[in-house]
Every structure is written in structure tokens, then in C-alpha cells.
Length: 435
Length: 119
Image 1 (cartoon, each protein chain N blue to C red):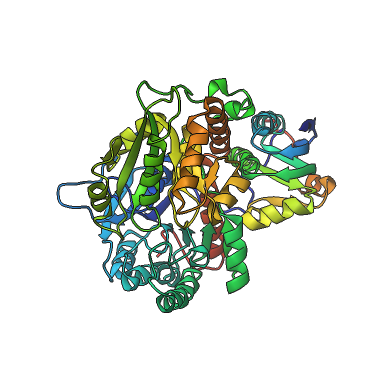
Image 2: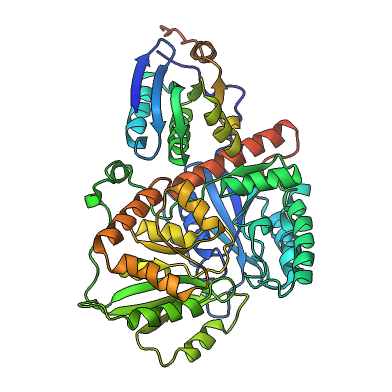
């Protein structure tokens, strides 16, 4: 049996040159981890001919480095924007005009371009600028203003400022919706944005797991012998928290809970250590230094500073439990997916997004009341005092994280780009090279 | 999950029934790979019996479609129940796949095999 060649109604969209506006290691901006893994897998896709990385400029002495490989798409790095500058939109547009990619993906959240309201908002106008140029543009938006507790997250000190931010947030969201497509990672976000803005170009695109999936391991996850190592290293049990701290990721309650756990009179209890892995949020410079100064007299706390990509497996692998000391959440958590990758039990605040993620993505954890050190200490104790419970939670999270690796999520974006390009080609809006 | 594969003249039909989630993906992928070989790159997936699909199930269908298109074929879907239609619309994958109301309609849309030519 011989079949006809490519159907005549399907244009050839192979050999894609895609640009990504993102942060990327060694840059330390928010979502750099997601950017790293997305780019890593995008390069592996046969339909991608080139990845153009539109990233923030690094401090002197640091450079973006990418391994060449004959079967991977090459990466063209263009550091063209700076966190906190107000002209990022124009600079990114200029880079896109110069490079003429077939499409542009934004890997962003609402504070990606600055901690100040003006640079943050102006940066978020970039997708609209590119769409008006005729460039197929997709925005992967990791959070939406509508679900963020701005006051708890440290963005609004009083109700008046909160109201102003929300109004400007509505304006900015409308601008973001000028992109060809806006991808959100949680079904509830899609429903909210569709309902509030009447948007028809909003889609659900799962966050995805950073490591490549092992479907056989998922199928056997009731008996997770093929999963990660469940044994912990010798020494104290490590209570680990990972991220960029100071805005809605606060350490004060966690330190208090750690002191309560240390003070417990539990017979034969294993010693414990609190590992604080990561850096200040770009919006809270100096926060970790102030925490370190305030808990200088507390034994057993280790600050790792910035965790390089090659050290991430050790940080997660050695942890007995991963704690999310959040006072608010701003989106689906990359750290939660990482904890799942390494088969770790997690302790989560009983607020908004995390409950959604747990329910919809199959993760499991112990919950605590935000801001309540007693509640947090009890939740951690339920994990570290019960190895069977710890392993069971870790196994469930591992199975959840294996469900959809980011490599497959990348395929969804490629499909969306191919459909957009085909649509614009039919409308005569773009030729080879979008702009 | 029940998986049944039927070879037709113009392609292969894979009928799925049950819950299509991460625990079932490995078996479905194997079935789709086999169907792709059997059908010369043209596969119809009948989802009439599927009452739930998660993101990993969707990803398996996307991967199957990519493989088929890589062979200059395609993977068609048919007989989606309403809950599945909602998921496909939410993800906009309803625009990526050719989706038919019935298996017969999907069969009719398959290209007619080209008779082998002799020199």
C-alpha cells in the first residue's frame, strides 16, 4: 500500500527559527530554570532549525554558554534587555526585527522585566508590539494578577496601591492578550482570563516536568522500586527550601518552625538541618542577608546561596523534605515539579494555587497554615518522623512529575506555532522569516 | 484501559476505552506505534470509550500525530465525549487534530490508497 505524499492543505513548517524571550542560567532572574529546560528540549526537536535566545544581559565576567551538538539546533544568544529598565520592549523589538524569527515565545511572569511598576508594565507590552509587526507570538504567562494576593506577596503595601496595581494589571493583561496566543499553566487561570477579558486566544499548556519522563516507571509507580533512591544520606535529615526569597517566599516562619522542631523531646530522633537554597528575589535585594543576621544564633541552618544547575540534583536528592514557606503564590510552582522529579515529599501552605496543583496534577503533600510556625513544624514532623509516609508522598510526587515531561510540552508549543504560522501564511501576513 | 487495534485498507484504527492517564500512556504509545506501522502512517483513534484524559494522555496523542505526520500520514480522532471535547478546546489541541464525529467519517477522510504502479 502506498499513500499520497504530504497532504496538499498542510504547509511545510519544518526548519523553524524560534526566538524565546526569557531568563536563562547563569542569569539569575525569575523563571531561569524553566527557560533552561525549555531551551534544552527545544533544541532536540527535529523541526527546529535555530533557537534565538533573547535574554537579559549578564554582569561583567559571566557569559551564556551552550554545547554544540550535530543533532541539536544551534542557539544564537542575544542579550538585549535588563531587569528594571524601561526600554526593554523597544530593545527586544529591535532584536526581533534584526533576527527575523518565524515566531517568538515569551517565558514570563508579571514581574519578569522589573520590580518597579513602570519597567515591569512596559516590558509586558513587548508581545503586543511584536504581534503588530506580524510576528507569530505566544506568551507563556506563569501567573496572573487576578489570583495573586498582592499585599501578602509584598507588591502592595496598602489597599490604595493594591487597587492601582490591579487596574494597571488589567490594562497590561489586555495588552498581553494582543499576542496571538497566551498560554497559562492552570485550568482555573484560563477560565478566569476567558471570563474577565472575553479572551478567545487563551489556552492551557501544562507546566511539565523538567526531567525526561519514564512512562514505564509511571505505570509501575504503585511499587516505585524503579524510581529515585528513597534512602537519605548519612547525617542530619535535611529540611530544604529552594527558590528566590523575600517577596512571597518568606523564611521567618520556617526558621521559627525549625527551632520548634529542634526543641522537641523526641526519643531517638534524627538530628535535623535547615537548608536554605537560593538567592534573594530580584524584588527583595538583601533579604537573605537580613535573615541570616537574625538567626545567627540558631544552630543547624545552612545557606547555600545560588545553586548552579549541576548542583540541583544534590540539593534535592539529599533533602528529606522540601518546604514551600510561601505567604502567597503566583503560579504553578517549578520547585514543586522539581521536588517531584527527585521523588521528594513536600510541605505546602494551605492556599490557592498549590491546592489546585495538588488536585489537578496528582501531587501530594502535608499542608500548613501560612504564617503559623506551630502548624508548619507539625507538618514537617509528619514527614520526617515517618519514613513510610515520606516515601509514599515522594513516590506519588515522582509519579506526578513523570506524567508529562517538559519535552512533550515543547511539542505542544511547536504545534501552536506551526498552526499560527500556517494561518498567517494563508492570510498572506508572513513569509519566510516572520518580520 | 482496553485497547483494540483494527487494520483497515486505508489505515489502522485504535479503539480506546476507559481512563486515559499517565498509568496507561506506555501501553497506548505502543499501540499507536504498531498502528502507525500497520496503517502506513495513517491512524484513527476512536475515543468513544474514554471517559477521562489527562495531560499525559493528550501528549501521547500529540506524539502519535507527530510520528504519523513524520511519515507523511496523519492521526485522526473520532467520537470524543463532551468532557474530552472540553479538554481539547481548553488546550486548543482541537485545532491541531482532525476530529470527526464518527469512525465512518474519519475513515472516509483517509486518503485512498494509491495502486502500485508497474514500470
